[in-house]
Length: 212
Length: 381
Image (cartoon, rainbow over the protein chains, first blue to last red):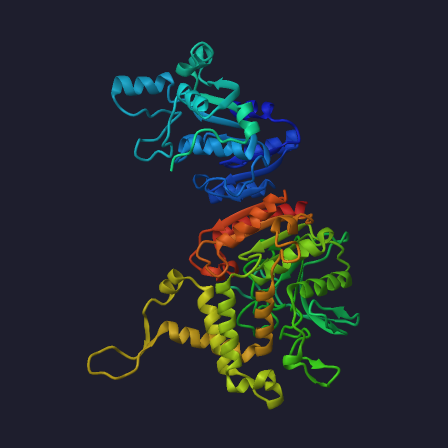
């Protein structure tokens, strides 16, 4: 299993209710069901992935995340998870808020656009980064809202979101050595464990007003 | 082209008639003291009686869902694409039970049957039925067949309503509920279409206020128009466009020619209407459309679908089709949201298709594969 999925699994309480946004082929949800006895649903829009989830006996719901999570009640899940999909959302900040409305806490992973390779690509070549990690051209990428770790943490602060845990993952040797020293430069993937700030959560306030 | 000897066909099948003598109290307050149900079964019931699958038919359906009733049959049963060896509802794994519902006109007790009290056909006096009456009669059929719990109950459209009602009325007797192109209740537009169809039948002079059998006739043109209306709503605009376009079957638009033009779509609809009206009973059509209109899953649960589903014990698969405007995807999402709200196991897929409501009957690869994978999990459950 991917390292980030291992980390997520460690953060999820046994028997909890989990909503997995953009669950893909259901690898994470399946592992959580088998190893942590969680219950819950995966949301996905790719028909092939939905069928794969179904073949694994998972609960999967065909739903476009860009249309929000209005069909889920407040605090109806213990944990809402989103792995490697935040950067594909039309409005990542609204998705984050929705995740923390629906769940007591959430876990988010995304690729770090501040990684040295991306910086080097832009700086030295003057071209948008294309790498083995992010193999798309600027015009055909599904990743429309890139951020660095630092960007993300600024957003969390603005939305009154507490960062409970942060784990930085790097699979390449150099990055692995240096990721803890300079995470925003060498971390490839970030895994954030988030919660609404206590005073916000108790007031049921959703923080700053949404746009639109 | 399917054929009787194909490896994935259930082949030659014969319906059986089950007679019931225990009075069935109906939702309308009347009861049927005795009745027949006509049933086809495919595959073998295993020793634990744990592999039975119930097929609930839609408005104009019947027991003949798969295979052929004779070597001469041109067409197989109505859901043959999905029932058979190696097909999604795999008869190598499952014992499939398909019946003609009460009130039907294909052998089960209905308006064409003899009313024992009068010695004449029931006709318009046949009791008004609701979906739950079918469910209760199906439960008695399950008792008769020795099936304590269905592995799955599967239905499209009106059939999906029966499957959902089963999950609420007999929560311990169903493990999986498959609800395809269905809804928790009809919209006003849907009821309006049904009412227009009924009016077409009732305003036919041959209807004789529902007593047409006594006059040795039937409302052929009314029933035919009713079917045409239904048929239009089962297809999508795009689907019809692709199938017929503005193609002409006869006549010409040439200047100077007065030869009347008939479009392909006209001829198609007339053919559908003719075939249907000569094989279907008008009172049954009225009864079935009313059952559709009256159905409201959550009515007795304070109109709260979450509360309605809270007692269900089975897993659910809900499927809708993008161009189905008669039972639109939003109606299926309402089912899914209620199930999620009630904390039930549910999966949902919205299948891309141009076939409108009829899509649930048609082999569409994405739908077929998903259905197959789900049924595999049912068989290993």
